[in-house]
Length: 152
Length: 152
Image 1 (cartoon, rainbow over the protein chains, first blue to last red):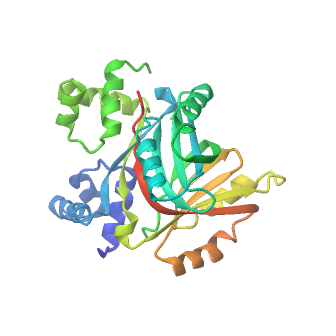
Image 2: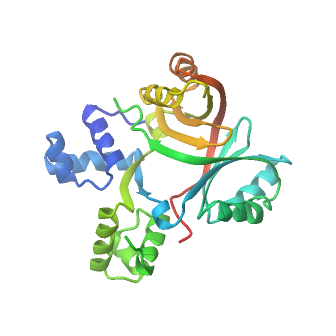
């Protein structure tokens, strides 16, 4: 595990808001030379802490006005049924996130759709036909916010 | 702003593989790099692209536990949402906040170093949040798919 100092944490906080900041810009902001900032960012990347960039887009402006989180409980359990379900669910283009969880459900899915009618189509034709699906619970996303997390 | 087929093609490839070098992205979308930069700038200026954020791998920083906490709030109190959300944002280990229409009102994504640390956060920082009427926890086992890709 990598040890971070205050400057590393400040760099990560800045990158978590804007992952496209150059070493020059980061250096100016935190009182580092451009090569020193570059070396620190590179070290965070090599340690796998800075694990790439995630686009944040206005899905509604692109025609995807509805995001739904689905809790899925499998009707049948066992290694084979988990693998079958996982393989099939990943292939659905409207499913952006698949998480295996412990608790009330077995899986959490984030599903995007153009509108509620489109969501119903995805749900009926794609999700409810997945192998092993038992109970489902849908919650429509209203707002989402990413927080910086424990970076000091 | 109006989004044309070229924008959609660029966004489709970029959202599916955000870490692709810009030259490769341009080739995949069938545009010149100059066009790519111009289109991305325009999408950013119009707010379709809000940001490109660094993905932080919390496991690499020693946070082994991730829990999705689903809350039902006491809606008889008119400011329940605002007061709950304001205080939840003060908890450093909360890395995501989502609100929903459905059986669940709010979801908090919480990370912890280990189960002892989790228990400490849960008792001292989560159960003390205001206006909670019910909590359910889903513990993350693994993330099988996570993408911002859209079926454009």
